[in-house]
Amino acid sequence: MDLQKQTEAPVSELRASDADRDRIAGILREALAEGRLTADEHAERVEGVLAAKTVGELDVFIRDLPAAHQRPAPAYTPVPPRPTPGAIPHEADANVVAVFSSAVRRGRWRAGRRIHAYSVFGSVEIDLSEAIFEYQQVVIKAVSVFGDVQIRVPENVSLRGTGGGVLGNFEVDTLDSVDSQAPVVYVDGWAVLGNVEARPRRGKRVADILDRVQDKVERKLERVQDKVDRKLRKHLGY
Image 1 (spheres, one colour):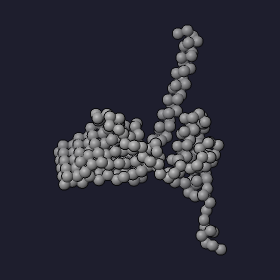
Image 2: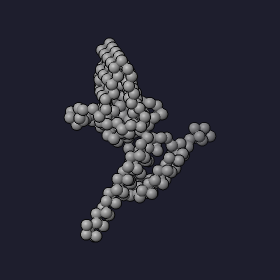
Image 3: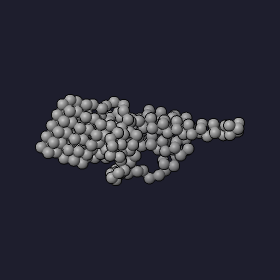
């Protein structure tokens, strides 16, 4: 008997990856937004997705949704085009500056559309691995003069860099997320006798997928409640 055929397992029995779970969570998120699932149904299925161990177990949660019967998306989806000039304000949402000192921005914080990092004989660390991305596209301007700028991003975002070094090092790892809706971080800048580096923090992923879904559900419930309140006020005459 052919040993390879004996050991091959059906696709449905393959162990599910984080990317597989993210794909199913995305389908459920869209189904919730389209009204195909109630909030309770969505929460129940997402809980099951997180606990699923095989690809077949994941498929159960979307078999009654249209997306389950569409052709699977390609493994690679193009990164959204770079924002056109003026699309993102020139003013920074946050400035991280170190002059003969150090400055750090990390933890659970809200990343705006533009971040400026300046290091002059100092060190700057910008860690987006646990940040909340309010916008899909984030531009980081990083300038290092006899200093060091370290940028870390979740491993499932897209990352691009444009810049260079003058007797220094400007290094940005290129990342392509499989999710076309994933955040895209652009790092622009220069390293003059200094260092600018941007790379993923392995093991850290955009963990606010469920947070974004919950926010959407809460906003939807707020709109429904507001509509009910307006009708009630109109019925009562005030």
